[in-house]
Length: 58
Image 1 (cartoon, rainbow, N blue to C red):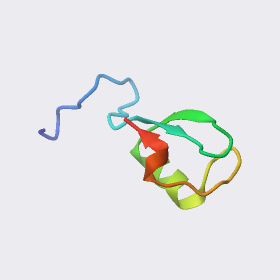
Image 2: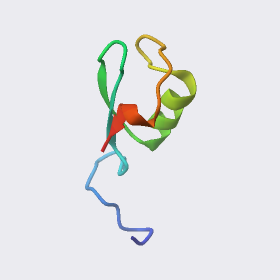
Image 3: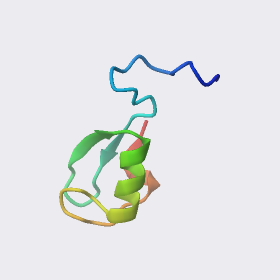
Image 4: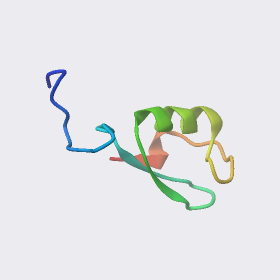
């Protein structure tokens, strides 16, 4: 993959999207890589439960 070629055609440039599903409250959120890192560091944005990589699916 070269730098100027996104994997997807997204209007906001979010090419590394995945879906986060909280194991505690079952909230599903589409997230980009920055949001994923924030959730891994801070927990679910809805209920604050700690989460692992297993909570994210591409």
